[in-house]
Image (tube, rainbow, N blue to C red; front, side):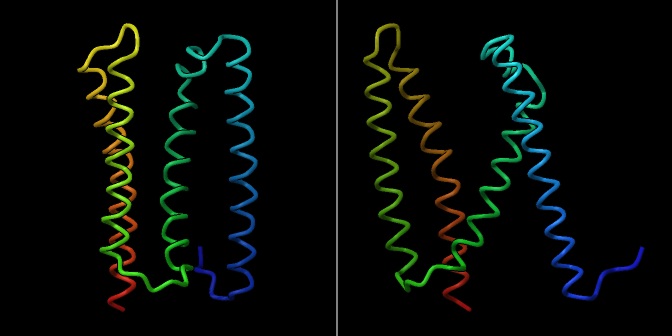
Length: 139
C-alpha cells in the first residue's frame, strides 16, 4: 500500500475516517442505550462497550485539548494560568470532600477518596494543558 501524497486525497481520507468514527460512536451509544433500557445502569456498565466508549471519549478529549491550545489567541503566562486553575481545582476537590464526608452513610475516608480522585482526574488535563502552553510559548 502506497502512502498518499496528494493533500486533497489526504483530506478526503480524514473525512472518511471522521464519518466512520461517527457511525461507530452512534452504534456504540445505541447498544449502550438498549442495555440501559433493558438491564438498567449496572447492566450497561458491565458491557465491554462501555469501557471502549469511555476510553474513546477520553482520547478524543485529549486530542482536542492539543488543538484548542494551538488556537488560543491570548499570550497569558502559562505559569499564572496553571496556578489559578490548580487553585480552583483544589478548592472544588476540598468542597466535594467535605460535602461527601457529611452525607448520610458516608465517612471521612470516602470524602478523602472522592477529593483525591477529583484532584487527580482534574490535575492531569490541567498539567497537560500547561505543558502544551509552555512548549508553544518557547517556540
